[in-house]
Length: 323
Ligand code: NAD
Image (tube, rainbow, N blue to C red; front, side, top):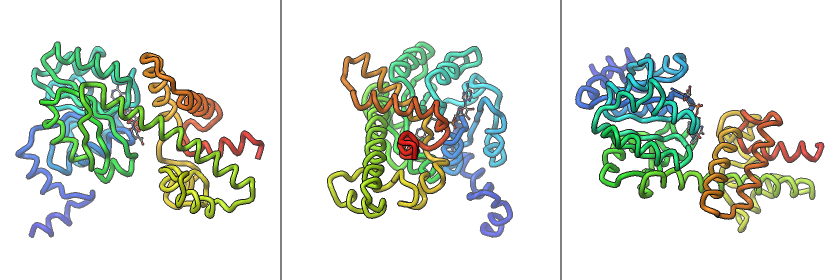
């Protein structure tokens, strides 16, 4: 009987009848920012039985989620009026400032005791500012940026790095485990962002290193698949060589196999390296390779690579040589 009902309504990967039944016992969660990452993340909360109240700057981004049961409202302030747990997944620092402190922002309408979780990758100093502003309104702000791309977001396999008041961590964890495989408490507010920025700086450096190594090997007459095999059994091995190889034809199912479409955009990587640069300047920390990586990805953005996956640095290096 249940199976029959499910087949009737199964236009998505889960059952609307079962969903509405489990939703009855859970209070709504607000979700703001339904882009590449936010949309699959909000869907996973719905799948776990949390009613969703959502908004995005572009109404068309909300359509798919609305069709599977989310309530869509017009502004972050309206989300805050209706939900006492809110997740934000926005592109960068200015968007977070607008959504939290703007004229129709969350903090204009937030209810006392609301838990605010920001999963965008932004400046840790702004996370701290938001925590202070939220506290003035009787709410709690935590930063919980993610690693893992759109695929991991769809499969609820993200890793969350969480910063904020430790007593609130458990409440955040309850929601984050619906969207991720790993949830790690990092310390006070802003430390989640710190961990994320450090990871992405190393990722950028590793990707450039892999791309230039592969290019040199190819020029020296080595077959790229053979060189990859040797690197991956040797000390040069890294995530960019063994999981996300930037050379077309070496691996399947990665952006380099699909003209660098999908994946993690060069613009977003340049943004994250800008955050690393700011934090390094503020803490007087030398990051020579991080700074150089920032420049390389910025130049790529101005040369037509902005919307390609960041592994297109391999193609960029080839073109720089006039090949
Ligand atoms: P995206 O640009 O696809 O989505 C962001 C969404 O926020 C958009 O739909 C946009 O309309 C909405 N938005 C912007 N300003 C708004 C406002 N004022 N009010 C309401 N909605 C607003 O970005 P994304 O790829 O989903 O990334 C989100 C964050 O996650 C970024 O900080 C990014 O660095 C980080 N991240 C992305 C990936 C990835 O692979 N894409 C991986 C890890 C982390």
